[in-house]
Structure formats: structure tokens, C-alpha cells
Length: 139
Image (cartoon, rainbow, N blue to C red; front, side):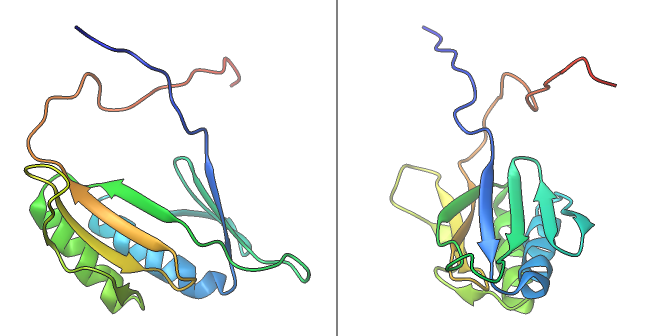
């Protein structure tokens, strides 16, 4: 039996109290996973469905969430953890096997705003497609 579902998440929006520190952290950890982080100006960062911007004058508190990024292998998880620590992240769980299911290999870091950021490798898998492609028809 095959189950096909659409995308659950369109985008994730984080608010940062220190965008420069946040940019350094995410460039490091995403770079370790081979994923580029884009900056369109001094106030925004973007990567696929992830959008990060700076808090405005009266915007409240920074966002605190748990995000898990897919890693291609265990070594990528280790690079993620090492790069994140070097870029100002705080350890929240060193690379290693977790009891969530057999083969779940992950590392956890707190980003500069206190969000729990994870890289996880679930073990060898065959995917139906390398990515989702959306064609809006707009050039």
C-alpha cells in the first residue's frame, strides 16, 4: 500500500533578536548539511521553506521552536553539530543514536535565540523524489 500526501508545511517563520548571530549560526549548520542560506537584505534570511527576520521595535519575543533538518548521513550530523557549536550554538545533545526508532542518528543544538535545532539521519532510504518542484507558471 502506498500513501501519498501533499506538503504539510508551506513555510516556517522565525523571529530573531540578533539577526547577525542567527545568520552566522544557520549559515554554519546548513552549510554543514550542504544547504545554502540566502540573505535578501540586512533584515531577512531564507532557505527553502524557512524564513527568518529580525524583531522589530515592538515585535515581542524571539521565536522558540524545534526544527529538524534531514542529513544525508551520520557524518553530516556530526558536521552540523561541530559547525553549530563553532558558530555560537549551545549543545542540546551530541551526535548519536536515539531510541525514537532503529537507526535514528541525530544531534541537537540551541540556536542564538533558544530554538532547539536538530539534524537527523534516519538510515538508508529510497525516496520517491529528491525534492518537491512547484511550477507557478510565473517567469
